[in-house]
Length: 202
Image (cartoon, rainbow, N blue to C red; front, side, top):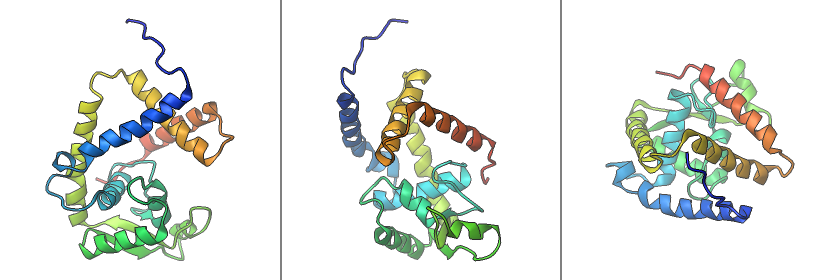
């Protein structure tokens, strides 16, 4: 295999490429190539797909517990629109609930699920998809997978893994300046191993 030249002379080039990639991705993720006939804005589509991935595909983030995803976990994983706003997420969930695409319920105050009400990511409510919500989210996720396969066709697996680790490192350092790359990689591998042992909802 031909040895590739060094492309990144300073880390700022990697950060800049993230912004450019997000700009370019926006062009293909807000149209019919991804959304099909769905007339919901991307901020609402994201919620449905996150719920589908967590509950039916066993995603580690957001993670489903007892067939639901907590309000806090949905908030923490949001990437579209104004993120980390309790009020905005509540409004979006209310609209999707009104369209019969999801159900929002209080987390039980007794039993195993009650522990989700406390702690740093504690929540009072959790969310699950309705059958109608699954019908909307599933085909969008399937088109998203095909889009990713097309965009990254020909990229070696080792480069895909490196890209994933670098992006994860950026996010981790934003949250904690002291996190090391070695610790991050170990956490990622442990998270993936745990996800592989989960049995997604069919």
